[in-house]
Length: 328
Image 1 (cartoon, helix red, strand yellow):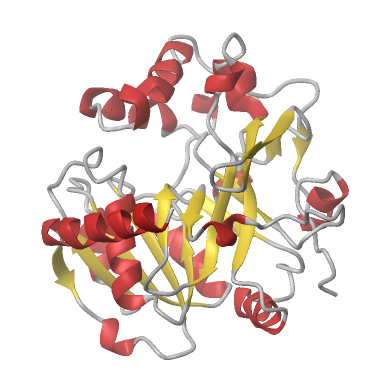
Image 2 (cartoon, one colour; image 1 turned 135 degrees about the vertical axis):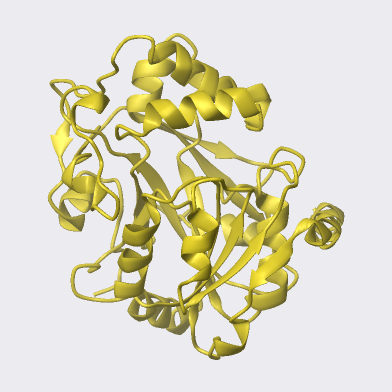
């Protein structure tokens, strides 16, 4: 595993050459800043709310990799005073789906910082998030000698067809996609990396009912007290060293955990799916997006009689989807 980690670090160093720095404000990063890292392509309508959401929750600086956007996304974030931006024409697939690019930035800028690595359609919900910013959580994690914070992805969707409720730029997507599957999840142990592997939710129910083991993984570790020797091994699903993946309590209790509310399934989903099918840059030859494309031949709806409307983080804790552990 030590050799594998060193190879990931070397890959990141090599892939750094594909990144062109187009907006450098990293000199404004303060020692105690919470940093947010993300890769995107053609996400202009989502970016205003994404930035506002994480600014409100204490992010001090954003570090973005733009993968050759054509819709003004790059120019928009370049104009934001708390954003540093790199752009690349490189292959998303050849960079291990952006992980090499992000690892290179984490190595350079995140050492000693709490680093939040998310997609621009992922929104961190954690215990007491209605009253406490993320730095309150990381202060408690520091005091508890905890270096990483685990989450599961919670796919959110609207009631009715995705195309029925158009998304406005800058809108809170959960005004539209406010429903989720409260159950229908399976958990297994990945002994190689020591992490949990979670699958289920509406994507497995709708797209992978006949092949449930091919459903996307829903476990992520997006928040880490970063050190230069760390590296993400597969998206933010798992890291090296392996001890960072132990975000659950092996003695039968519960560690504090959160949820990444996933706003993928709004009316922009169909166009995004068609774009990604043409690009062919996603995992396993795009099997996930091919399943989406097949399902979208009819006007897709995820809502079912078991769907539950989102209220707050306490609801998710009651359902067992996250835990405040012993953070009071």
